[in-house]
Amino acid sequence: MKITVIGLGAYAIALARVFHENDNKVIMYTKFKDEADIVSLKRENINVFKGVKIPKEIEITTDLKTSMENSKIVVLAVPMNAVRSVSSDISKYLTEDQVVCIVSKGIEPDTNKLMSEVVFEETGCENICMISGPSFAIETYAENEIGLIVASESLTSQATVKVCLENSRINVNVTKDIVGVELAATTKNIYAIILGMLDGMKKCDSTRAAVLTCLVSDMRMIIELLGGKLQTVFTYAGIGDLLLTCMSSKSRNYTFGKLLGEGLTTDEALKKMQTKTVEGLYSLKSIYNMLKDIEVEIKSIEMIYNVIYENIRVENVLKYIKR
Image 1 (cartoon, rainbow, N blue to C red):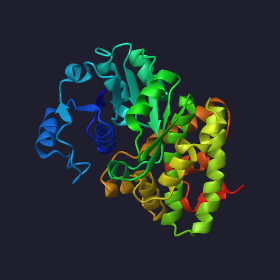
Image 2: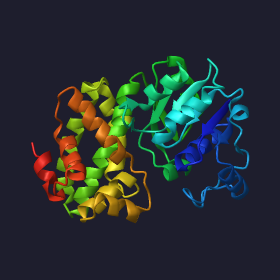
Image 3: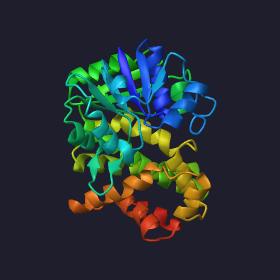
């Protein structure tokens, strides 16, 4: 089966490798010619995934139309803020039988729309999927056992993506609750900041476990209040991804929170990390506003919002979480 992966980031490369090892024909697209030329030559993206080779059988191109021709799955593995523009680009060539599979996580600023809603608005596609689950790019690329979930209201789309992804080391579950999966994927990034803050404050494992327990409860409420299903909390997209992202220094969100806990400001932390991509930071305002719209207050969201945007002292994190 032919699969088009849009993007040349770390997770795009990791997924392309999985699709390739499952005997699919994989082509990767970027609109940036310089990036395509360098990655094609070196067979790696040294800016985001240094030392990780892209199999030579995977073609890299800047020709979007050709890359999408006869593809069964089009994977959007671009930053959240590029999803709308990329969706508009692929809409010119997208056919009715193609599945659009979203990897990007978060909520669009200003509109407060989920990524699946953004893609549907731009493409009108009825075959939209979301891939989520506890899976760092480097660990997905390597020979590790990984659990993923594919969410789509289309059973056919679920099955198509599952058969292309699953193998002896990649376990794939499916669900129709794409809203719940997207909300879980967004919320866990926000909560990773909180757990990182505790680490930066030198709080013990017992304290962090107590806080994480409260955050699971809050995640459940957010998912149900905003249209998702309770069961999704207990999947790879929920507790699975929450545990991974909230307990590992490999997570940008966790690292950002740790720097805040050590006393750095938001700008100082981002500068030290040499990145502007901290998904939880940019989804926080959206979740906060969505809850305000339905007149519901979730303690953990209020707390992290106040720390980042209202200059409340980081040391108050336990006060806000306390039940």
